[in-house]
Length: 236
Ligand SMILES: [Zn+2]
Image 1 (spheres, rainbow, N blue to C red):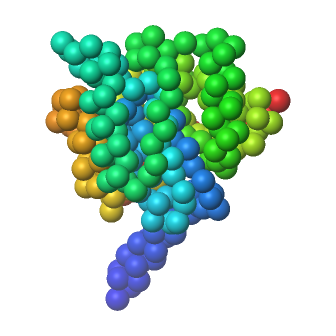
Image 2: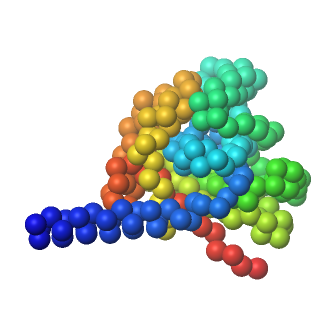
Image 3: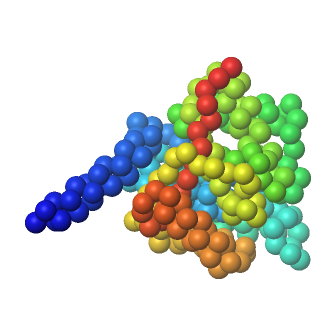
């Protein structure tokens, strides 16, 4: 009996800790997830998107480029058509609205006009939370995306909370030591269904990678599958 009580206490403490760990997700009304390419929002935080949707939060999936350089043997125009269609299907699975920005895959730019464009989009959408790429990443477009969103956060007068997520950590995201976790165990299968809409991208290899990442983050937060984030500190 005593052993049972100890076990029950430990179990309750663990549950409380996990629930407490997700309080940071509560209270938001509208979230933009801004990824560099079709499939980035889904793989980075598809489980969190689904969880936010289940909490009644409006979520918009923003694609900085349309993956124009992402299909071998296809022109930019052909790839854009295919990959936007794949992203629309993924968004349907997640129940979110897609927005396609006008940058070009492999050639994403940072300049005054692009800063203005990102700020204008965020001002028009009025999110209270934005999730984007962690800025240290082997992919140039991911780095550009993070820089543009970070600048918009500053220029908007810190009008939203900014969070960074990870994609293919080690291979793409680098030096990422998360401080926040979301238990996505119940949403794992739906997340996989969403990102597998990107059929042109060889998603089986991606699944193996992301499953491992989710398990690693799950171990850190005492659950099975988790996604992890870092919040940008407020500061002028
Ligand atoms: Zn990408």
